[in-house]
Image (cartoon, rainbow, N blue to C red; front, side):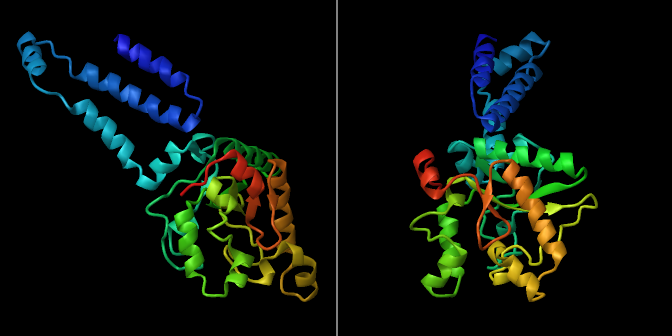
Length: 269
Protein backbone atom coordinates (compact mmCIF):
# COMPACT_ATOMS: atom_id res chain seq x y z
CA UNK A 1 0.00 0.00 0.00
CA UNK A 2 2.98 2.31 0.59
CA UNK A 3 3.87 2.02 -3.10
CA UNK A 4 0.31 2.94 -4.14
CA UNK A 5 0.37 6.02 -1.91
CA UNK A 6 3.75 7.08 -3.33
CA UNK A 7 2.56 6.46 -6.90
CA UNK A 8 -0.64 8.46 -6.32
CA UNK A 9 1.19 11.53 -5.02
CA UNK A 10 3.70 11.23 -7.86
CA UNK A 11 0.81 11.42 -10.35
CA UNK A 12 -0.53 14.56 -8.69
CA UNK A 13 2.83 16.25 -9.29
CA UNK A 14 2.66 15.66 -13.04
CA UNK A 15 1.87 19.01 -14.69
CA UNK A 16 0.67 17.65 -18.03
CA UNK A 17 -3.11 17.23 -17.69
CA UNK A 18 -3.39 14.48 -20.30
CA UNK A 19 -0.62 12.39 -18.76
CA UNK A 20 -2.06 12.94 -15.29
CA UNK A 21 -5.45 11.68 -16.47
CA UNK A 22 -3.92 8.60 -18.10
CA UNK A 23 -1.85 7.69 -15.04
CA UNK A 24 -4.73 8.29 -12.65
CA UNK A 25 -6.75 5.89 -14.74
CA UNK A 26 -3.92 3.35 -14.45
CA UNK A 27 -3.71 3.95 -10.69
CA UNK A 28 -7.33 3.03 -10.14
CA UNK A 29 -6.91 -0.01 -12.39
CA UNK A 30 -4.02 -1.05 -10.16
CA UNK A 31 -6.14 -0.63 -7.03
CA UNK A 32 -9.00 -2.59 -8.58
CA UNK A 33 -6.65 -5.35 -9.76
CA UNK A 34 -4.95 -5.68 -6.36
CA UNK A 35 -8.17 -5.86 -4.36
CA UNK A 36 -9.96 -8.11 -6.83
CA UNK A 37 -7.10 -10.59 -6.55
CA UNK A 38 -7.54 -10.88 -2.78
CA UNK A 39 -9.12 -14.21 -1.73
CA UNK A 40 -10.62 -15.28 1.57
CA UNK A 41 -9.30 -18.83 1.17
CA UNK A 42 -5.74 -18.92 2.63
CA UNK A 43 -4.82 -21.94 0.53
CA UNK A 44 -5.87 -20.06 -2.59
CA UNK A 45 -3.81 -17.06 -1.48
CA UNK A 46 -0.74 -19.26 -1.04
CA UNK A 47 -1.21 -20.76 -4.47
CA UNK A 48 -1.48 -17.34 -6.12
CA UNK A 49 1.60 -16.11 -4.28
CA UNK A 50 3.65 -18.96 -5.73
CA UNK A 51 2.50 -18.30 -9.31
CA UNK A 52 3.72 -15.42 -11.50
CA UNK A 53 1.00 -12.75 -11.82
CA UNK A 54 1.04 -10.66 -14.99
CA UNK A 55 -2.54 -9.32 -14.79
CA UNK A 56 -1.58 -5.79 -13.76
CA UNK A 57 1.19 -5.58 -16.34
CA UNK A 58 -1.22 -6.68 -19.05
CA UNK A 59 -3.84 -4.12 -17.96
CA UNK A 60 -1.32 -1.26 -18.04
CA UNK A 61 0.19 -2.40 -21.31
CA UNK A 62 -3.19 -2.80 -22.98
CA UNK A 63 -4.37 0.62 -21.78
CA UNK A 64 -1.36 2.48 -23.19
CA UNK A 65 -1.28 0.59 -26.43
CA UNK A 66 -5.01 0.90 -26.97
CA UNK A 67 -3.91 4.32 -28.17
CA UNK A 68 -2.51 4.40 -31.68
CA UNK A 69 1.31 4.67 -31.80
CA UNK A 70 1.06 8.14 -33.31
CA UNK A 71 -0.96 9.29 -30.29
CA UNK A 72 1.52 7.77 -27.84
CA UNK A 73 4.26 9.70 -29.63
CA UNK A 74 2.39 12.97 -29.23
CA UNK A 75 1.65 12.37 -25.55
CA UNK A 76 5.30 11.45 -24.92
CA UNK A 77 6.30 14.79 -26.44
CA UNK A 78 4.08 16.65 -23.97
CA UNK A 79 1.06 17.34 -26.16
CA UNK A 80 -2.46 16.96 -24.80
CA UNK A 81 -5.70 15.58 -26.15
CA UNK A 82 -7.97 18.62 -26.33
CA UNK A 83 -10.83 16.55 -24.87
CA UNK A 84 -8.83 16.23 -21.65
CA UNK A 85 -9.45 19.97 -21.22
CA UNK A 86 -12.89 20.43 -22.80
CA UNK A 87 -15.18 17.61 -23.92
CA UNK A 88 -17.54 20.02 -25.70
CA UNK A 89 -15.05 20.66 -28.48
CA UNK A 90 -15.95 18.70 -31.59
CA UNK A 91 -13.31 16.83 -33.55
CA UNK A 92 -13.48 15.77 -37.20
CA UNK A 93 -9.91 15.12 -38.27
CA UNK A 94 -10.03 15.43 -42.04
CA UNK A 95 -6.70 13.68 -42.63
CA UNK A 96 -7.92 10.72 -40.57
CA UNK A 97 -10.47 10.07 -43.33
CA UNK A 98 -10.81 10.63 -47.06
CA UNK A 99 -12.52 14.05 -46.97
CA UNK A 100 -9.35 15.97 -47.83
CA UNK A 101 -7.45 17.13 -50.90
CA UNK A 102 -5.54 13.83 -51.07
CA UNK A 103 -8.67 11.70 -50.80
CA UNK A 104 -6.99 9.30 -48.38
CA UNK A 105 -6.33 8.67 -44.71
CA UNK A 106 -2.76 9.58 -43.74
CA UNK A 107 -3.16 9.87 -39.97
CA UNK A 108 -2.17 6.33 -39.04
CA UNK A 109 -5.38 5.67 -37.11
CA UNK A 110 -5.38 8.83 -35.00
CA UNK A 111 -8.87 10.10 -34.12
CA UNK A 112 -8.10 12.58 -31.32
CA UNK A 113 -6.83 16.14 -31.72
CA UNK A 114 -3.62 17.05 -29.88
CA UNK A 115 -1.98 20.42 -29.21
CA UNK A 116 0.66 21.89 -26.95
CA UNK A 117 -1.06 22.31 -23.58
CA UNK A 118 -1.04 26.12 -23.53
CA UNK A 119 -2.35 26.19 -27.11
CA UNK A 120 -5.09 23.73 -26.17
CA UNK A 121 -6.04 26.04 -23.28
CA UNK A 122 -6.29 28.94 -25.72
CA UNK A 123 -8.66 26.84 -27.84
CA UNK A 124 -10.76 26.11 -24.76
CA UNK A 125 -10.92 29.86 -24.11
CA UNK A 126 -12.21 30.39 -27.66
CA UNK A 127 -14.81 27.65 -27.20
CA UNK A 128 -16.07 29.15 -23.94
CA UNK A 129 -16.37 32.56 -25.56
CA UNK A 130 -18.34 31.05 -28.45
CA UNK A 131 -20.67 29.29 -26.01
CA UNK A 132 -21.23 32.64 -24.29
CA UNK A 133 -22.15 34.61 -27.40
CA UNK A 134 -23.75 31.75 -29.34
CA UNK A 135 -25.20 29.13 -26.97
CA UNK A 136 -25.51 25.81 -28.76
CA UNK A 137 -22.69 26.56 -31.19
CA UNK A 138 -19.33 24.76 -31.10
CA UNK A 139 -15.92 24.84 -32.66
CA UNK A 140 -15.09 21.76 -34.70
CA UNK A 141 -11.42 20.84 -35.13
CA UNK A 142 -10.41 19.66 -38.60
CA UNK A 143 -6.69 19.36 -37.82
CA UNK A 144 -4.33 20.14 -34.96
CA UNK A 145 -0.81 18.83 -34.23
CA UNK A 146 0.57 17.16 -37.35
CA UNK A 147 3.85 15.18 -37.49
CA UNK A 148 6.31 16.36 -40.11
CA UNK A 149 6.29 12.96 -41.83
CA UNK A 150 2.62 13.53 -42.60
CA UNK A 151 3.39 17.06 -43.77
CA UNK A 152 5.81 15.42 -46.22
CA UNK A 153 3.09 13.09 -47.52
CA UNK A 154 0.82 16.08 -48.10
CA UNK A 155 3.60 18.01 -49.80
CA UNK A 156 4.35 15.09 -52.12
CA UNK A 157 0.66 14.57 -52.95
CA UNK A 158 0.10 18.15 -54.14
CA UNK A 159 0.78 18.00 -57.87
CA UNK A 160 1.87 21.57 -58.58
CA UNK A 161 5.24 23.30 -58.77
CA UNK A 162 7.19 23.83 -55.54
CA UNK A 163 6.51 27.57 -55.85
CA UNK A 164 2.76 26.95 -56.05
CA UNK A 165 2.86 24.43 -53.21
CA UNK A 166 4.04 27.05 -50.74
CA UNK A 167 0.78 28.97 -51.31
CA UNK A 168 -1.11 26.05 -49.77
CA UNK A 169 1.37 24.15 -47.60
CA UNK A 170 4.48 24.83 -45.57
CA UNK A 171 7.55 23.11 -46.92
CA UNK A 172 8.32 20.14 -44.60
CA UNK A 173 11.98 21.17 -44.70
CA UNK A 174 11.04 24.33 -42.79
CA UNK A 175 8.18 22.84 -40.79
CA UNK A 176 4.61 24.05 -40.41
CA UNK A 177 3.28 25.59 -37.21
CA UNK A 178 1.06 22.48 -37.18
CA UNK A 179 4.27 20.41 -36.90
CA UNK A 180 4.97 22.08 -33.54
CA UNK A 181 1.44 21.58 -32.20
CA UNK A 182 0.78 25.34 -32.21
CA UNK A 183 -1.76 25.69 -35.04
CA UNK A 184 -5.29 24.44 -35.52
CA UNK A 185 -7.77 24.19 -38.40
CA UNK A 186 -11.34 24.83 -37.30
CA UNK A 187 -14.91 25.50 -38.38
CA UNK A 188 -18.18 26.27 -36.64
CA UNK A 189 -21.21 24.08 -35.94
CA UNK A 190 -24.62 25.54 -35.08
CA UNK A 191 -27.16 24.39 -32.49
CA UNK A 192 -28.53 21.86 -34.99
CA UNK A 193 -25.11 20.26 -35.41
CA UNK A 194 -24.69 21.63 -38.92
CA UNK A 195 -21.48 23.20 -40.23
CA UNK A 196 -21.74 26.91 -40.91
CA UNK A 197 -21.27 27.64 -44.61
CA UNK A 198 -17.99 29.47 -45.18
CA UNK A 199 -18.32 29.64 -48.96
CA UNK A 200 -15.87 26.81 -49.57
CA UNK A 201 -15.21 23.47 -47.93
CA UNK A 202 -12.13 22.85 -45.81
CA UNK A 203 -9.00 22.30 -47.92
CA UNK A 204 -10.27 24.37 -50.84
CA UNK A 205 -7.16 25.44 -52.73
CA UNK A 206 -8.56 28.49 -54.46
CA UNK A 207 -9.06 32.22 -54.06
CA UNK A 208 -12.57 31.88 -52.63
CA UNK A 209 -10.99 30.48 -49.45
CA UNK A 210 -8.69 33.50 -49.05
CA UNK A 211 -9.72 35.89 -46.26
CA UNK A 212 -7.58 38.56 -47.93
CA UNK A 213 -9.80 38.46 -51.04
CA UNK A 214 -13.23 38.38 -49.41
CA UNK A 215 -14.26 41.85 -50.56
CA UNK A 216 -13.22 41.06 -54.12
CA UNK A 217 -15.01 37.70 -54.01
CA UNK A 218 -18.15 39.44 -52.71
CA UNK A 219 -18.06 42.01 -55.50
CA UNK A 220 -17.70 39.26 -58.09
CA UNK A 221 -20.54 37.27 -56.42
CA UNK A 222 -18.24 34.31 -55.88
CA UNK A 223 -19.10 34.22 -52.19
CA UNK A 224 -22.12 35.57 -50.31
CA UNK A 225 -22.41 38.03 -47.40
CA UNK A 226 -23.45 35.18 -45.09
CA UNK A 227 -20.15 33.43 -45.86
CA UNK A 228 -18.18 36.48 -44.76
CA UNK A 229 -20.37 36.87 -41.67
CA UNK A 230 -19.66 33.27 -40.68
CA UNK A 231 -15.94 33.70 -41.25
CA UNK A 232 -15.92 36.90 -39.22
CA UNK A 233 -17.61 35.08 -36.35
CA UNK A 234 -14.99 32.34 -36.52
CA UNK A 235 -12.17 34.89 -36.54
CA UNK A 236 -13.73 36.79 -33.64
CA UNK A 237 -13.97 33.62 -31.58
CA UNK A 238 -10.42 32.52 -32.36
CA UNK A 239 -8.96 35.97 -31.75
CA UNK A 240 -10.56 35.86 -28.30
CA UNK A 241 -8.38 32.84 -27.52
CA UNK A 242 -5.22 34.52 -28.80
CA UNK A 243 -5.12 32.97 -32.29
CA UNK A 244 -4.76 34.75 -35.60
CA UNK A 245 -5.57 33.62 -39.12
CA UNK A 246 -3.67 33.62 -42.39
CA UNK A 247 -4.45 35.23 -45.73
CA UNK A 248 -5.13 32.08 -47.76
CA UNK A 249 -7.21 29.73 -45.57
CA UNK A 250 -10.30 30.78 -43.59
CA UNK A 251 -9.94 27.68 -41.38
CA UNK A 252 -6.29 28.00 -40.28
CA UNK A 253 -5.26 29.74 -37.05
CA UNK A 254 -1.86 30.07 -35.37
CA UNK A 255 -1.10 30.53 -31.69
CA UNK A 256 2.55 31.34 -32.42
CA UNK A 257 4.68 32.32 -35.37
CA UNK A 258 6.85 29.58 -36.80
CA UNK A 259 9.95 31.26 -35.34
CA UNK A 260 8.33 31.38 -31.88
CA UNK A 261 7.20 27.78 -32.16
CA UNK A 262 10.72 26.65 -33.13
CA UNK A 263 12.18 28.48 -30.16
CA UNK A 264 9.65 27.10 -27.69
CA UNK A 265 8.93 23.55 -28.87
CA UNK A 266 10.55 20.61 -30.62
CA UNK A 267 9.20 19.70 -34.03
CA UNK A 268 7.02 16.59 -34.13
CA UNK A 269 8.67 14.18 -36.51
